[in-house]
Image 1 (cartoon, rainbow, N blue to C red):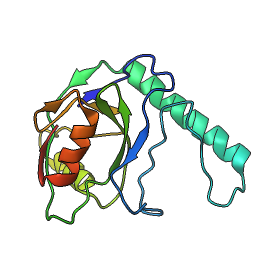
Image 2: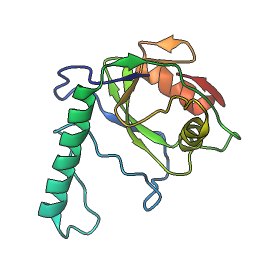
Image 3: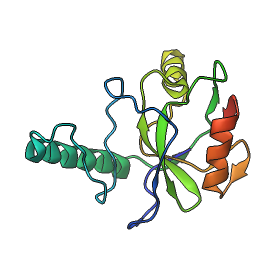
Length: 156
């Protein structure tokens, strides 16, 4: 996975969900990083304030990405069972996958917590990271999704 922006993306890419069932209250906060995304509110109340908060969150993520140098790292993950979900959403961008959200209770959150507890700390897969390869599949974002859904052991 590579942390950082891919450059001008325009309206390229589409959102892809690894979660067949959307987690509502168990999601970790992870604002999208694209201006063309729309903030959806459950009840429609407070849209102006929530939209402003959303824009500030996006701006903060982009600022952080600009400040940090781009880096590449390997990330290995093993699902505990065939039914365990990875627990993240991605966006397809130029044959790669951008992490849009990480959900609570998934294999990625568990692996990230394990990495946080190590000394020295291990790598974590976070919002904004770009997945360039999954189990050796590179340049074909759809095939990478197939790997993520069908395999218990994954190497990004």
